[in-house]
Image 1: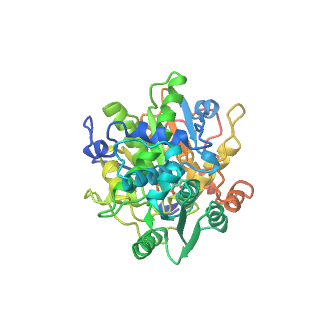
Image 2: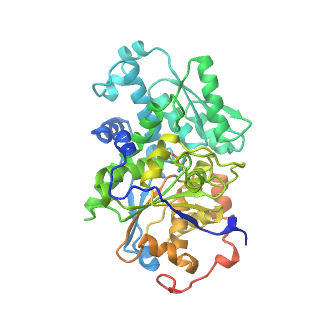
Image 3: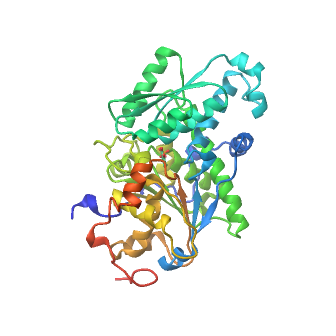
Length: 425
Ligand SMILES: Cc1ncc(COP(=O)(O)O)c(C=O)c1O
């Protein structure tokens, strides 16, 4: 068995700030920003809170107090949380163009002929591995603007079609997600397009910061939903990462709200695209590129370059970095789809399900007892996961869920058949 095939490789973050506030988190979440994002999202036609689902049977089988899943599989019928970031960044970019950063705009104003006349014809552009582009295309179309979305050559036909259906022109780049990010920026400069990127680079930080802030609507909803269940906060948070914007939003939000009382945090990446894990491993505080062809079924997480503004926050607020192979995500998809009797069923795509797979291996695999103990996972733990996407790539979804694709290697199956956690060894 090679290193690469182990279900969970983990790294304790030596740079995490204990009991201090990260200045990066203050910068990311200035006072009132979550309210501004939510005020905007709540006006979008069709907006609804996404459900927070509780898996009590699985939690008790694993020896945990609770597993809470923020289920983004049907957010605005677009299949993932991503639209929250793209739409808010477009909103902020429009306010900035209008010189109206000092007041919020209503959706009615945004779509009014007067404002449209002032703005002229803007083309919104983005690079994507699928979900971000879909959200940007949808948001631009809703507001009456055109959009152009760059994808890389491994993007599935279904993902491309979903973007086109939402009104965008799609350009396929012969390279990776990171190459698409680079190319859209070059072409946007020549054509005068407005880039809405979910990652930052030197001189381009406001828009990706707005994207991250936009995701906080999801977390404000989660806190409301947890409070309704009598829970002040989760004790643990597992969040998946591509460039790290979702993780920065989630961990940043909780750090902002609870300071040193925040949940214990774990960032999870595919082992073939583990740019944050790799950056933590290098250990010099800087973000580092992860080399390779990023060949993973977790398409939304297949990123080689960390978002530097997300990395800055994560390097000071993440407790553990984890990387896992595809079969861990596939296991998560199947468990969500066929839950224990009494637990709700959840449609979860490759990038959405990996954190559940990781949690299960940590709770059940004897070789991961040291990590379980370090994390303090047990009967008092209330674990929050984000199901960040539903069935966004139907062919691959069926390959995994119907055909048993990306199956768990033999030595990691049936390692424990009884109820409760694996015996301590
Ligand atoms: C479904 C899904 N989950 C998680 C992520 C990770 O987000 P980020 O790239 O901000 O780390 C993505 C990114 O596209 C995604 O599509």
